[in-house]
Image 1 (cartoon, rainbow, N blue to C red):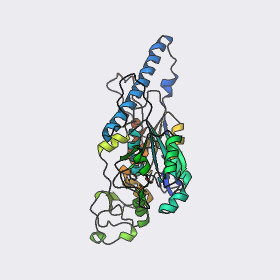
Image 2 (cartoon, rainbow, N blue to C red; image 1 turned 45 degrees about the horizontal axis):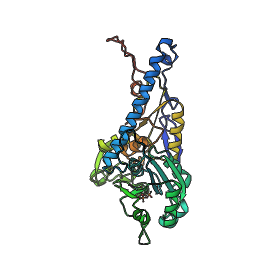
Image 3 (cartoon, rainbow, N blue to C red; image 1 turned 180 degrees about the horizontal axis):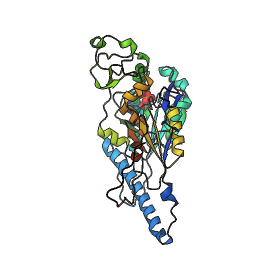
Image 4 (cartoon, rainbow, N blue to C red; image 1 turned 180 degrees about the vertical axis):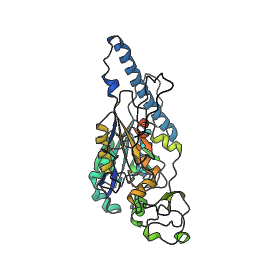
Length: 398
Ligand code: CTP
């Protein structure tokens, strides 16, 4: 239990997620509207509007797919005249996906946009250990995070890190793969490109690697334990108090100020990653508002180093209702609560990871620590019958 009385769940690498105060989960329900007895004469128009809503959702999903494909300017799927059936294009990606981060998720997003179905092979620990050293996360944890990603349709466990000809032919035949996709960083083992066979077969495509993040970089941020990776001016300028986690250190990155746990001197956080609105839009292409009858579930946390425990708790939260809104706390709030060098990932990085989780319908960015009346309306579906009274009585705050 943290000092503020909120519940912390230490999962995975010893970091935790934080559930909302006072009962952990806030469920905004619309039972009043749900219980209204239907008028038989309305039935036709209701099912009609349900159909329309479903059609609208399908159309939105299609528009999102097309936008993503266009954004990559690498449309593999040939445009087919209306009404003509075409075979779905199946994409293969593989990798270690250790300490899965938004760079991996962005790779899935881009790979998925090149076709209709994304199959992801996850390397087994033994072969990763042989080729580049032991992974931090177990096979099961890496599988869970890949499976939890909304851009992934199918997961294949225990894939070898080195993709030899025989294995490549095996996956192309077994999973009916049209294209093998990898980031545009070369993947050379013993002087040979591991995707050479796929290239020769004309079945290889690359996607731009996401700059600013890698598993190695994340492990570096953790190991530093400098309490300074998120601060951006020199400790000497501020009394040389770095060891006590208070004073800022040298750096030239984008930074934000925050106040320490006990009202310490403001800290400055360095971020190597800048989120564009374009990137946010691509990651939230699926987001549609809840329906009027949906039960909306709200859960908040830091979601730092997004891991298998996070995926599992989000799946459970989603099961409690029809629509899941996830609050992501700011760097300042997380640092004030967790101290040390937390969060390892900055707010934008954490938001992208949460948005990529298939159980998440929408994200509240920079969610407040205390869930107040002001937060809940943000998580509610639009009222289809707005109150005609233009001067409603103001409601008191909790
Ligand atoms: N990838 C990416 N952007 C990143 C990191 C990885 O597009 N910032 C892509 C890789 O190009 C590859 C896939 O994610 O297609 C799987 O990468 P993985 O095998 O996990 O290893 P690395 O490429 O070494 O990724 P990292 O450096 O993060 O360990």
